[in-house]
Image (tube, rainbow, N blue to C red; front, side, top):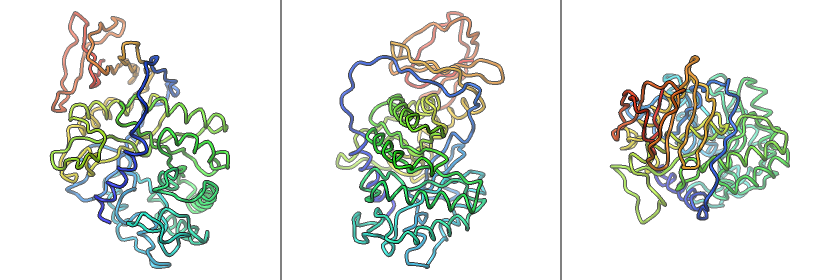
Length: 422
């Protein structure tokens, strides 16, 4: 099935499963318990997805990690279409291109080929049998061993299956998935002890109970990192905080202290080249709104304890930060680049929401204080004098960073697009 149709099927799943929430009631300001303030925000926090790797479509933004999912030629279904008949041509090209550009790879394992599937004719029709577990565990073991041996020292991170709490991606039982994860974890660490294994990436608020049961079955032992997809659209990025905290509570219940990675998240973003059709998409962000959502998503994910976020995506529409199949930037890409520049190398001291809906994240860069402020609606507030702020950095509606002085009045607008003060 063509990539565009595969992505639409994926997006429809997100729309149906994740994007519809009950109407929110008035709430108290969000309370975030920060990770240790001594932890510097690394460049690896910023990851992305893209599907058409080429020089003219390579993302025009700085990023450190590339998650290989919804990519041509990278899942088991593609790599071994017939038993013992391997095709690594596309994955070899992806790995070489990642090395050329100095970015790391997270490879998602899974999607059973029909010959190995326990239900080879099971829908979806574009990948029959792909969601079912293999009928013979030995075939899965050989697949994992073959991939990790080939890319030892070149691919450093592996994820066990995509969104298995959704029937569209995994139709087996949680017990079966724990078995697959156990095999993969053992093999990966036998072959490449330096590689990291990410747990199956759950999605949606309802995925928390699924994760709880998976950990009850012992799944947490077979992962170095806990993966989750903190999709909250059409809600604003701050809505992710509650789900992140629920995941953290489940991990604490099971005595698990491992990093949490948001291995897939995003919103529908306006495209000049492709329009939503037949009401398929629940909400599409306007360009400036998309700038703010990208920036705020990275802020609240880090503040909440998520140590990596792979944006979905660059070259797919309508979710891409790039447009025209990745050949040019959307305005949202400027937000991605700006928030990366503002955050990497700092430590976050606090990140609080006030009763009026305004937010303040306090940072420290080389012993100097910096602040990032925003609000869901525009409000005028006076900056505390003890912040010793002199410079203000805002993004224009066109995404350009604009520098200015705070001024003697010390009053500044908090707006949906974050502002940097230092």
